[in-house]
Image (cartoon, rainbow, N blue to C red; front, top):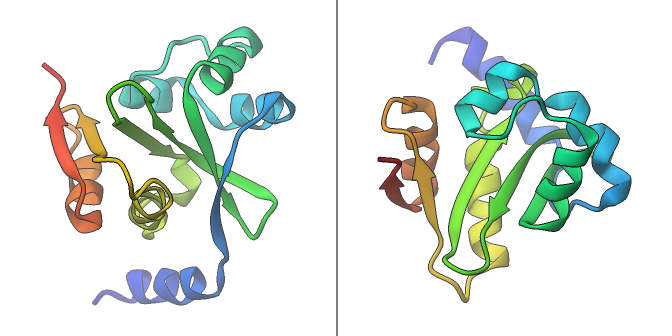
Length: 141
């Protein structure tokens, strides 16, 4: 394993990662971590204004990915009606296992449902996350 990955694996092992439902109080935090690139990759409306954030939080089953209880690193969304699941992690926290762990956590939290990841077939990183987490996959057409 390259040295870069072993350093991040060590850091990740001491980080406490948890999922917590986002609320209106989190609008500023979620707005701060979604840039144009993230919005495009995750198929989130852009510009991601406070009004869009409010809809994102209130109209979907959206969970924040929190590091050590205080840093919002991304989000996982599960649509109630069909168990469609989507996730994103801020670019500063990618490629260290946070998305995979978060996908596993949401599957544990909602174990009574058959979740599946809705993925753009060109997004290889998201596909890897779903595969590592053992999540079913549907591709965006």
